[in-house]
Image (cartoon, rainbow, N blue to C red; front, side, top):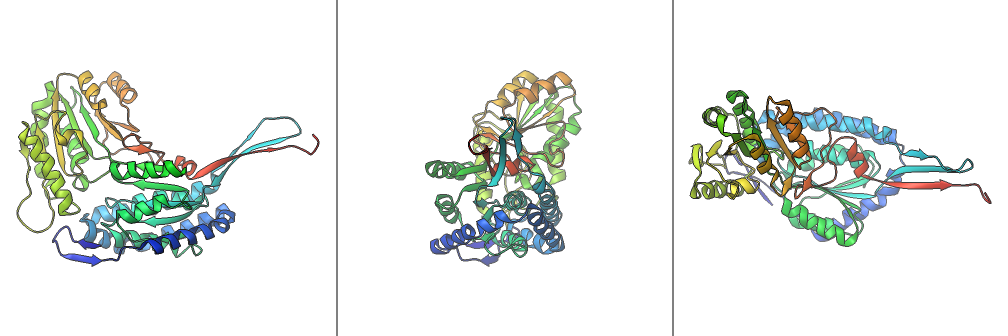
Length: 447
């Protein structure tokens, strides 16, 4: 694998892809370590995560620099991801020993229990857009519940992913956390290995669908967060400048490369002109805040979608094409007069593009926002309590945010729907995903 610096196009590293034999050996080591790790007291597993979190914080600058070079993240964003990842490890260290089953009321002479047990070996496949924070959730939840893990970071940030995982593995018994370098072929092999009990994947819908198919054939569990096409609904009666600031934050932060970035914007007609003017201004404000896209391949995807929109009648109010120069930079882009059939509106763009569709009223915006094959998240900006109530009930997505594009309390979980995946991500509920419930009925002999 050759990794290029997205800012300059210079080579960062060349890393060998793990071969099939080495991949199988890693799974066997994880399988061999599973019984001992499952029998390790929960408090000891939690203590190992706590130590790992401290090591991650101590290595924050190293991890951020690797991330910056491999993915183009700004230093502040990269440091924020490291801090979030360390916090997530601490959170699961605290939650793990509290993860409990329940007792049932049977006959007087019997005991009936439901107890969570580790599932075994978990393959964790993580993305490049926030490699530390996302991996911390899946690795932390899997390890603290007594599973062993085989982790393959994204081929776009192999050094960042590996270094983060090494900081955990160094505080764990041998075989409890195995790390593989590789592209999609390695992930596909992991998903098909009989000794892998769970495949947890954050990434594209196409990859997630392929994983789900393979795992269904052999009875393995999946936890999938696939692509999204998140909508923003801008209601009448809100301040257009504030709404534009929210839209810009949702569409342009991390160059639009966040799982829950805004991908479709619906604005009510009475507010449209003022909102679009403010959003174009915000695009200029954000131009100096964002880093490049992860690589030229991703920039080509974004440009193809913008070109398709323009060819089908969209107006470019800001951006719309990369400036000459090295790297894979793409400017914050605002498109007006978009329709639901444009690629930029019906497919995940994963770039700093805000495509806007003007609709006559809130009900139309809500109906069109709900008409989509994805189901990750959505945001609604409204001062109308009735509209807010209707929105969170009507939108068929896992997370609905009212008046705050990136809001959320600590410990919150998410559960994508439709083409966006299945299973909980983050929160105490992720511990349930990583365990299987065993029912125990215990009666006295002859009773």
